[in-house]
Length: 146
Image (cartoon, rainbow, N blue to C red; front, side):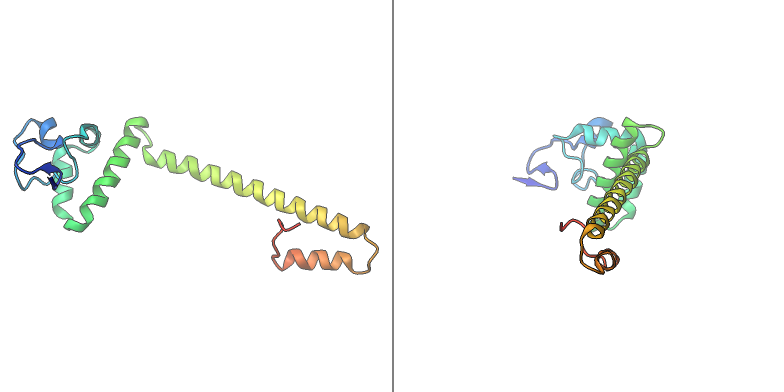
């Protein structure tokens, strides 16, 4: 049975205390978030932020906010290990560029569909077909329902 990241009755230190080579107390602030079976999790956080700073941050947070804070620190630390200069900002920037490119491609595809519809309606013999095609596009009708 596990309780707060450690086995009940066992004296196994959490990953943080094991790395820092110290005795893991019952009220260890790291134990619930850095279990002994995930040593790399704390190692990267310690490398980027330092154990003292992580301890201070966790102490200042309310209990219910700590898990999310640790998750964010682990994500940022892993990103910093991969890219020491930009960290997760580099990943976010890359994804934003992808989004911009895909939005441009989507706009071009939608414009091409409108252009093809207008050509199709202009060749039809019914009067006012061009006006209907423009009205449908302007009203936001799905361009993918051909």
